[in-house]
Image 1 (tube, rainbow, N blue to C red):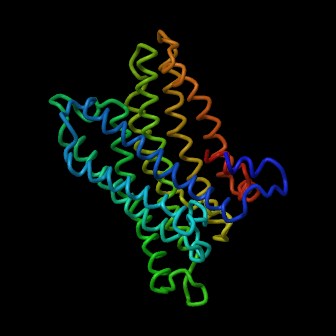
Image 2 (image 1 turned 135 degrees about the vertical axis):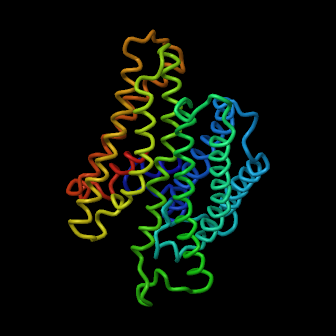
Image 3 (image 1 turned 180 degrees about the horizontal axis):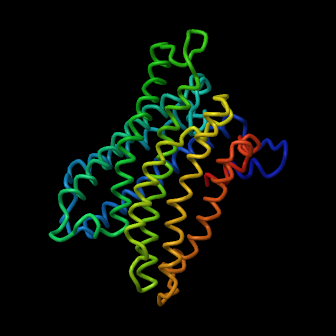
Length: 338
């Protein structure tokens, strides 16, 4: 709300530049790391054992430890507002910008602590699902939400590691004057963008896949029939997770990697539209011929489809490199993210 007030009219001086940047950085970071991810983890904790017939997760202590690490990482980061200023280099914390602001230390330490908790949670869910299924609950009989939890947990293991590495490099640069990103000393700033987005793009899918799983189960329930094309849905989920790691450069089309690199990653990005399209059509075919129940949950799941479609189509527009040159650093990208 404070940011919106600032942007209501040109030349507004409601907030100064530093405060606006702090709010923007903390908003993006909080929503991704401290709101969306833990809410989905909460659903996983609650629903997955019920869906596979397990009494609890595999490592209850690890589960608790993961939660407290996440919570204290988030609290540490938010104390920065009262201890000299919050991070203000954006939720991506690009270098060399991030190296010049005092709040970056909070960003680095807070996300590292919280990230360890997230990784512990992912290990826990994978172990639970692969070792604690009830007799007869084969992998291809699991509900869609459990399948999406498997893929999302695998994404966390492979995506949070480069993020932790990148944050560690920033920490060494700030505390010990290392020169990973200092161009004058032979460093490279673009390498940080690669490290960040190798995490950042799979992060998008580890947020959206469990949501897909929820929608799949809810839609089938309120259409009073089985999910259409269950096996293709599982395949599409795995493919989205797989391709998600191969398309991080579409966040970096304008850094000057050349037309061939941009073209390859642009085409790869559009390929994600195929498994995603499979999902959308499966949802639609689930509803066709079903006895639809227009309850609040049913309506919410149905309205998700056109809403998500708009978000997905804007992603395909951004994947077209020539168009991306125009869209880059505009509110079109912000709108697509949201």
